[in-house]
Amino acid sequence: MKPLKFLDKIAIWMLRLSFAGYLILANIGYFRSIAISDFQFYVALAVVVLALLFIVGGFTSNQGLTVISSIGIFLVLLYKALTPWPPTLTDHFLVQIVLASAALVFASRGN
Image (cartoon, rainbow, N blue to C red):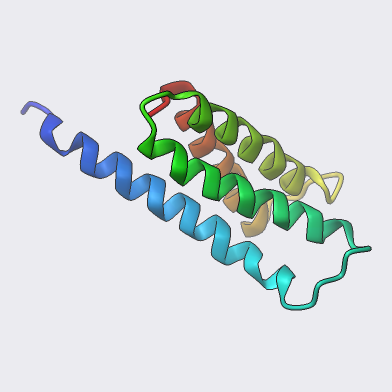
């Protein structure tokens, strides 16, 4: 059976919106108590800004914004996964790695 190529655009946009939506919703809790002295506040701010740029990059004809924001998201998620050194195999670690791999897919694929 041949793959359903006509569903490619719909699947990519569903993945893009759910990926960015999860990143925003998972990090929005850090903004309820604005602790400017807390480093995790800045990590969450970077993730939210990069996720918004990731969505905006999907609407542009140039792939640069998508690729740069995907690489930034990958680096921040890798930092979040490896912060408790040595990393242990927990659900938090696996979620961060799965999200980082999705960011790499968009970095390698572009729009």
